[in-house]
Length: 169
Image (cartoon, rainbow, N blue to C red; front, side, top):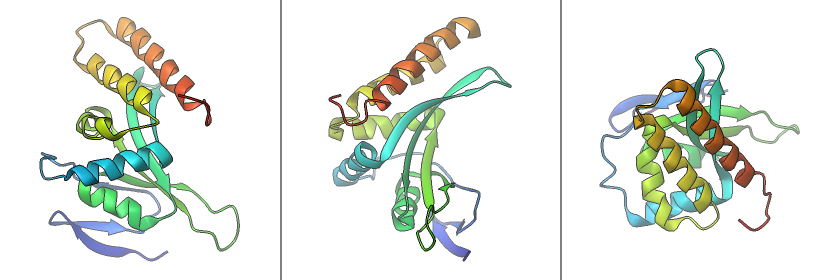
């Protein structure tokens, strides 16, 4: 595997590593053009997902927005423009095929991403609205048991929408 050094927003970023590579998140997204938000929305509609993970050790639910693809240049573009994390998410099924990489944004850091893409989403509007509702639970003063019940309900709703597999959303 080739490891390349490059600069992302003035900081060194190593690509080609088989694990996780993190790029600092942006403090502001005000310089992102409408066309870039629309492009990101299209990528999420076609190649992306909204999902909720559960950590049993800490009894915590967390939101993730992700796009997986074999085109490394796309993942690098996402990291350069929106920050986040990249990971090797799949190995080739056939010899000579490229590996699959994922761009991931987690937790509260997904809020500006969702707000930016929502006007442009076509297919995954329902998941994005549920993701916003999930993020709103981060500021809820309820006890963890009550919060986890609400978060589990939102997780199940997002999962149900994700499982429609081409059926009308």
